[in-house]
Image 1 (cartoon, rainbow, N blue to C red):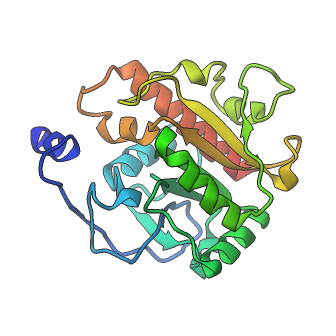
Image 2 (image 1 turned 135 degrees about the vertical axis):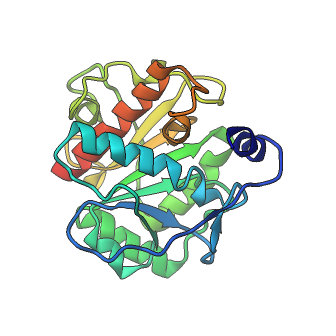
Length: 244
């Protein structure tokens, strides 16, 4: 099974996973994955927003359940468009691979702008240098005056310090190894009113892919310490998003 999965991931025929129906809102924390483009029945490598679904978030929610009192849904992922009014029921949303396939309509931009400004928190993951222009262009449709801040985990007065110390003490996330991207990971953020002393509305994992570690953490493909570091980042993101 692993050999087949990796073959699909790195050059072989794409492996597809059936996208399951959303679970009705019941007040429990649910991992929300943002969809862009038309709805599809299967997740695959050709569907960028679906990468690592559903294994990545299932493994991650197991970690959240073991380490915290969050009590999340363990198996369920809700997949929502940026213009879906259901989004406002969920405090945290995850966006994967926002590269050239990600385009935002006026309706999506307006709805997601309201989501962020009303307290929603966005986790962006799994994209690299060639994708930044596409990502920035679409984010400016959502937040026309948006500024992107490089985050610093070591300096208490620097932008983004709080998120790296919301649960685990993470002092040097840029030293964490990438799963397959060259160079160091970069962590950027978007703050309310473009003011780094206010609430962080979005954490951007740029030039890295922490959910890849979540997906393959049980396979022995990477050292345990590297997977643990990816989980620590994810736990901190959720804890920050739930408390700010």
